Length: 476
Image (tube, rainbow, N blue to C red; front, side, top):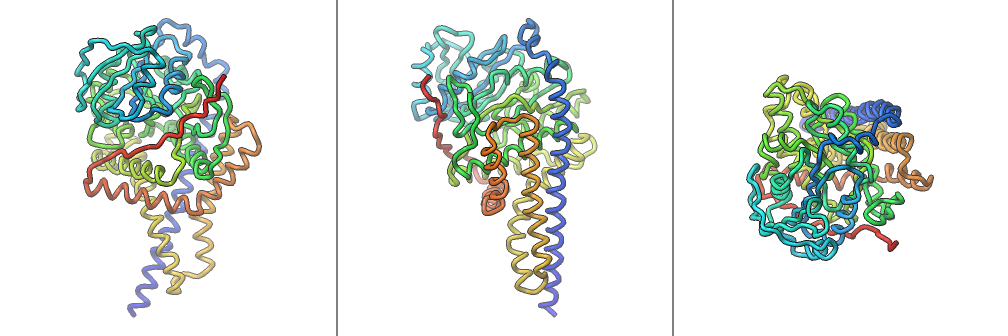
């Protein structure tokens, strides 16, 4: 009797997980479909988008680009060079050196001839790490500002940057990132088109590893050499490009990447800046903006811009990637816990009724379901609760369907933007979509479960060390 009960329980659980994987992959496919519609409309509008007019218009909003940096020596100079070379009428770059112990500041001082100025940092939003000094470029004092502060984390650095920012909009950019030449114009255009409603805009993040970068600009896009990074390319296209474009189209965008996001400074000050008690500060500030603006009955929107691109260095080792994914999933768990009152609440519209429940069931819980499936399906086979035919159907639903979704995202990118010029790169991407299911997904599930568990235990958050290989920057 006990054995029969166990077989029935395992069989029920296996079928439940089977349905879960069907639903999650179908939801990904639906977001890709929404993204395809948005891409088609964006490409039709591109010839008359008015980017040149925005560049020449004296009323174009000014922007402060905030670059938090902690031990970013190998990448900081080309990153700042790329920002200073952006095609945009009025902007400043604010680098916040968050207690670096490497040569980050020395490289900046040597390259840009920094000089120290007596400067009192405003207290519009709170921060913990004391600001030790503020420096400007001798030749461009209004364009490049570098603040040195005690180590306090990324959110703390961004709050110092918000306090230093002197422009209408703030753009948050990772120090290991390089923007396309017109990326800032594209990201700011929604604010220029609808200045009273647009509260924030996110840009797409792609992987820069092994791309050819000269003078802080990506001049040749290449598929990374390492398979671990190639799989991340496919993952970024599915999650960051098509996924967020789909959510933006239906008004449910709740994540704007900290690697490339633009916000109205007054709104950030109004909500108290970046949260200092989470490692997921980029998603948290977006959800908090939704919460405050919906509670105030404001007419607003948060949007995603699929082109141009922010190029960022991705982890090239499993150890560093594991730390990143633990941190990301921990941040997601903290955001959903801190804003749990919004989940399923009609007061918050599509964000409360659709987006946040989706993130609970299909983002937060997905690695747990994946881990349980890896135990229950083999157990069901051993107990005779499931047969080989069901096991094959399960594998097709969980992994075969997922491979098709990833391939669809890759092909949609190729048809829409054609970033990878070689057919061999597309072939490598398709192979990476297949290889993602053979160990990579299972490893990511393990790291993500650990990250969520750390959040629920209340363990002290640490960012960990991201080893930079540096951008490939050949001599001109």
